[in-house]
Amino acid sequence: MKNCINLIVILLLVTSCGTSKTKVTKNFSSKQVGMIMNGKALEPMRVFKINNIQDSILLRSKSAYVKPDVNDLVLKQFTDRLFATVRDSMSMGVGIAAPQVGILKNIIWVQRFDKDEAPFEVYLNPIITNYSDIKQTRREGCLSIPDRAEVLNSRSKSITIEYDTMEAKHVVETITDFTAVIFQHEIDHLYGILFLDHLDKEIRDAN
Image 1 (cartoon, rainbow, N blue to C red):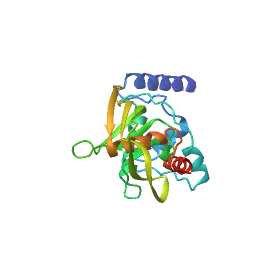
Image 2: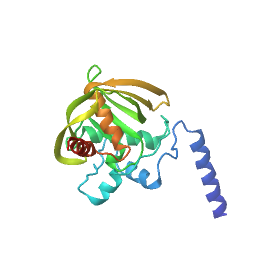
Image 3: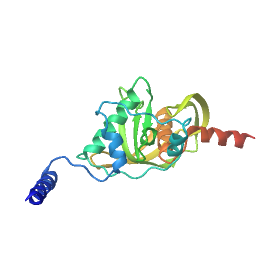
Image 4: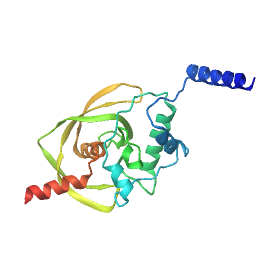
């Protein structure tokens, strides 16, 4: 009798999940879900730093595709917490990538200085399909590299990007100037690349 009751409860849960307007997809592993759901939507997550060995290993890893789904509860919670992290007084910046909080997924937030009121926007699966030959010189820092900023000369002045929105709309866009630098910086994180790698290359090329 007890087994029958348990079976009924399970069937009811499966049915209710299937008919709900919101759901949890398989975008994240159980470990990632635990990291995401252990705090409220407006609660910042811990920023991973390169001066921590385990953090550094993850920051050097490649991120994975995320399926856009506005009804994915965990995805929504994660994008909210990632935004809360980049706006937190302890880690405030102009952009952030999912690996910087320990989640290897292709998700970034970027502040759009090329738009009115410089809003923050979230991007899923962003890729750069074209880099201009014209470069720009900008000073860069990183939330994952404490107390260090350097001037880079190798960022493209203009880039073409493709990305998905939370509503699963695929967008192609051309970005220029400082906002283009932010996109290049954050998309690098999705491939395990840090801005210091570009500095090292510039030094080698100069020598």
